[in-house]
Image 1 (cartoon, one colour):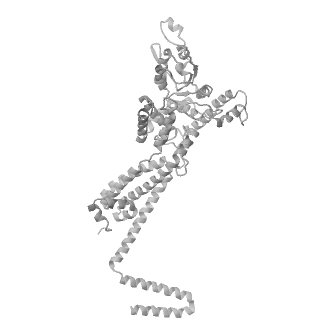
Image 2 (cartoon, helix red, strand yellow):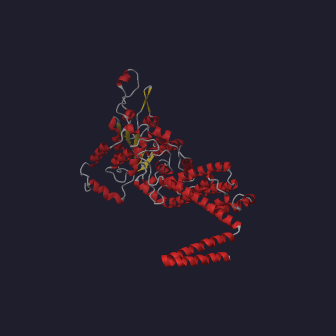
Image 3 (cartoon, rainbow, N blue to C red):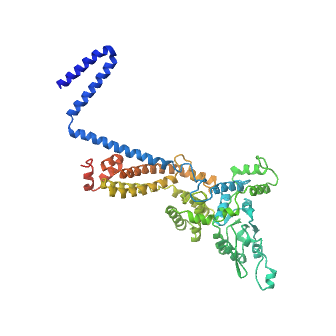
Length: 551
């Protein structure tokens, strides 16, 4: 130590002389540098070997910890950013639908809504029924634009389609729907009808007071609606019917009409215009709003809708088949439908009967909804459309809607995923860097990451409360989408934060397994899981893992 002190004094004296030429600040800086070097050498000489090794090991642990965290952030960013603000990709739909289909549907919706007030839901159901090859029932009091809505679908018949319209009474005869008997056929002992221009040759049809159909009409009508076939004499004729819109002021009264009622997959209860929108309706019809002319407004509106209709019959053909071939239905959606039917039939009073045929067709409808929105998988948000499918009485529509919203707002398995991740962490600690075990565990972690990423993608936009998957949905009216978003956004925001935390932890474990990170480093990366592991794990597994690195 004396020699070291002498070196310091000598160095100080020498540099003190030098400062006369170079300045006091330069001497002071060099003196401090020399002191630090000497101090470091002194500490190194006095420090035990175990402490030096500990410091080196801590440095290596910090390097490994920082490397894992950096890689996690690189993997996490694109997952969290994917899907934000989009409800479907119109330029390159994942479902394989034509790139311009969603744009055509939006334009057609606007055209059909022209001149109507508070009929956004019915217009969308009208088009959706046509894409699905199903039928729509409009139920409500007189004077609520049911007939106007039904007639507007005729605008898609511009490329060679045939529109058929008829008002039924209790005394209607089959000839009114299916055509008169052929006189020449009778001369040849053939019981055939002249069907040209009648329902068996129609592309789109509107039947008002549809539940006035009597038994003479009913059987043939049911066959046309369900099988698209018509028995004309001894021949079965294929019916090109795309969609039939039925209207009624009341529900069917007799049991013989139940089968006809069940043929209408989509149903909507058309109410009077609300008080808040009544002034808009009256002003529109009075010609006070810009662009609205007084006089024959209905005729003008119908002509505008027809001229602006971008969808033709050819656009509807084949959509259902393509959707059934290219869109998958997740198990979560299947479980939701099964639980919903059980709730309606077993827990509602009075019970709501849902036929097997209606359930099967509702799945096909959800596939079409996803396909036209540009997705290759049905979303749980699509199930909100079931509020217009699974009711027998109009009051039950709200029951279905509220049940679905409650189900969507439930915890999306966060606790279960956290339990699985904790188990995976414990097994990773027991693997202790073994390459074979780490590879197998890494595959499990990757699978868990995909589940979490998928759920986060479904909740895109919830942190901002925008919920684009709802607000940009083609088949949910702005009013319905807004109500659902206001209900779900706060709950989804909380769920998403929990999922993001789990995803970060899952990625941390996955990267650690890729790098064969040792257990004591994973303890620093995931302290909560480590604490749970040492608290609940077998002592023979825990004891060897808390001693640091491998010998």
